[in-house]
Image (cartoon, rainbow, N blue to C red; front, top):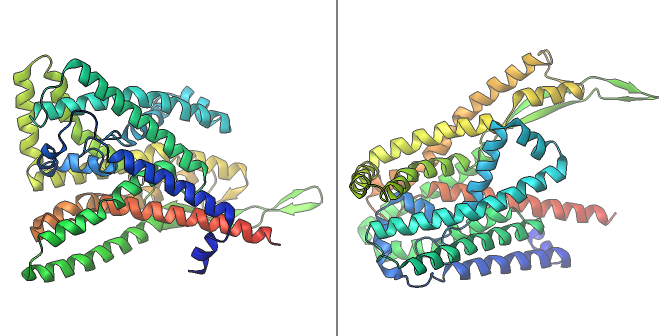
Length: 422
């Protein structure tokens, strides 16, 4: 509490928090303004019947279900960043250009991701509007209105991308993560009001159990998100001039959940692909598109099939993303260059093998954890039978991770100011 009060005693920190809060308020205002010519009342039933669109709506902060000006949220920017990361793995020349040139390379990477966001936002906006039209949620739009809406949606995504980067400059957490965080938190009052409207005295034990499970899930998310395996590392003594360096022991922290929520985003994107594919082939064959939609709806409306498929995809993508972002060989080389080694393990390839084996073991636990978190809403819905009571595991994971990140960044700024006093 003392640290919380101290935040508002420091003018610079108080100004940063105020500006970030105003930017988040501006985002929520934009998320409440629908695009022209849309009847939002006809969308609620459609989104209520589709779990995939519900998850996509979660990442857009509720803007998708209301077809707001920022209906796609920061999704296109996240997709562009993921594509760029994958391209750096496939093409070593891109990795050299973006990652081995320091700050200038990172600036090039971010600039390319911004440019890629524009066509992705236009494509996603057009595909989603066509999906709503094919499902008879929206009336067919004239070409001029369709083009206008796509331009507005694209501009909204670019505006959110700019707001996210502006928030990041204030060093109060990651801007994109905070926008998703604000969208999720804004849905909490709606969830409580929906539960209050459907509440009956006979369901009181179910609600109490739900509250207890929510607390347990939050504690579990914090525990796993902060969990790490500490691999001991020692540094050999080195003599430089008249001074001796090294001879210390430390550790290499390997996080249990190294992939974060990226595998869940990958899985959602892959599960949504068949629906968007059906919209593309509808141009060539409406009958084939209708059959593909029927098959997709059959599988995804089955809670058990959908949950099992979702869980498997999250586990697979957790291993995949960890493999492309964590390089044991590179870590082994860096340790060897700095005179570090794992006690009892020879430097070089043997060290890389030990690190790789350790990462694979802890990734199994992290992958299963992410998979359970992803399908947690389906599990609670199947056991309680109450649609308003859904333990949104993905939402909880994002909220807890962002809250911890913001707390750490604020504490670091407070610590810096405490040193300035001396």
